Amino acid sequence: MPDFALTTLDISAVVLYALVIFGIGLYFSRKTEDGEDYFLAGRSLSWGLIGISLLASNLSSSSMIGMAGEAYGGIGLAVFNYEWMAAMVLVVFVLFFLPFYIKTGIYTMPEFLEKRFDGRSRVYFSAMSIFLSVVVDTAAALFAGALVVQLVYPDFPMWITMAILALVAGAYTIAGGLKAVVYTDAIQGTLLLLGAGAVSVMAWNAVGGWDAVTAVTPPDRLDLIQPIDVENGMPWPGLITGVFLLGFYFWTTNQFMVQRVLGAKNLDHGRWGALFGGLLKLPVLFLMVMPGTFARVLYPNLERADQVFPTLLFDLLPDGFRALVLTAMLAAIMSSVDSTLNAASTLVSMDFIKRKNPSISPKALVRVGRMVTAACMIFAIAWSPVIVGFDTLWSYLQTTLAYVAPPALALFFLGVFWKRANATGAIAGMAAGHLAAVGFLILSITDTFQINFLYLAPILLVIAMAVMVVVSLQGEAPPEDKTADTTWTPAFFKAESAELANVAWWKNYRIQSAILVTLTAILVGFFW
Image (cartoon, rainbow, N blue to C red; front, top):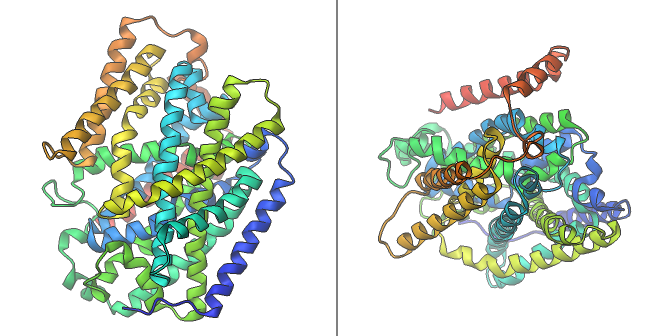
């Protein structure tokens, strides 16, 4: 095992990085005048910033540690299915959903549900989103960061570590809002790719070749597509249903991720940025998943799979290089925490405070947003230790989403593609889906009935959609003003096709989408 000790150079690099990030937050705090500036960066973001910010916020420390851990002691290379599927989900997002999000001028995803259905759906989904932002996204990122610090300072209390990390990330988020988040993400995303790349190359050199990997790794853990009867893996039906659905929630309805796309300067930049983010997901196989597989050769007996990436970091990299990757790890923590805190703040401020008090001044709303950010930060610190009870960090993230997210997806699927869906059907469907989720959770806790979470997600979705359809058909159709700017139709597609006919091919998002799908298919086919 390596010596988990920081040199003066390592510490200096981390401190310098933290000071730069603080400076960015303070700079943008002076330019934040109203709610649109604070929550959506003044709707001024370009496609490059959006794409790298999507990557940085998603590939947080929890992903770096979680995916390497799953590749080492869990489902193997199949954990990458979450990444390439994200690219496919983002194609669906820019084709069918983003145009309506931009057209309606929303601040939050729950606000879209109010425009399509009513206020009940907005409040319900907003409360759910706040819960997931704090309990899943923020808490997991803090826990992952604490794991790294614990290797260096094993006697330092974990909750104090998480508190320090949260305070650092929360400080510049409270000050500068989404613009501070996105610009710091651009720096953090670049460091993230460089750092992960350094670890991957050094791990490959230490292993000595692919034959050494295959000698110690079960064959089914080196395949992306696994058989239906695989034990403790990812059966291929679950890939088609569960992975797609969890990815769909995360990339198209989750305030945490969609918020930076809502801040785009126009629809084109939003689309290009989302597709750029999807393209950046493809190298993740080599940067963050493969190192966990290589570690099977180097460290066959780690006590906890989540220790893989930090162990590679301290064992293989020299002091100067280690400083780069340590900074990348810190960047990953900050990127994830700042995004989730800003998302939760936006949800509370816009879906509850401003909705109840429409006349609140812009500056007062910003002050409320900052206070909410601080409150969410404190709660995430308190919740983080709960994650210790799960086998791996990745299993915590995906299992929690499988129980909570699918019923909400029914509202977006049917709301966008079926004009007949009404407000009463929406709230009934989501409530029924979550009641069913509680039932499955009780059965699982009592060991009465166990089901793979990848199969649970589509079951809950079908239950919610079925109830939504039945209840909607028993009531009146929604008025035209509820569906005009929120529902996809063939006529919308034809009108858009006419507009794209005069657009250069390299600016045409449909051609860009086709290229992304092709590249993804080639990569998946190679590791099938």
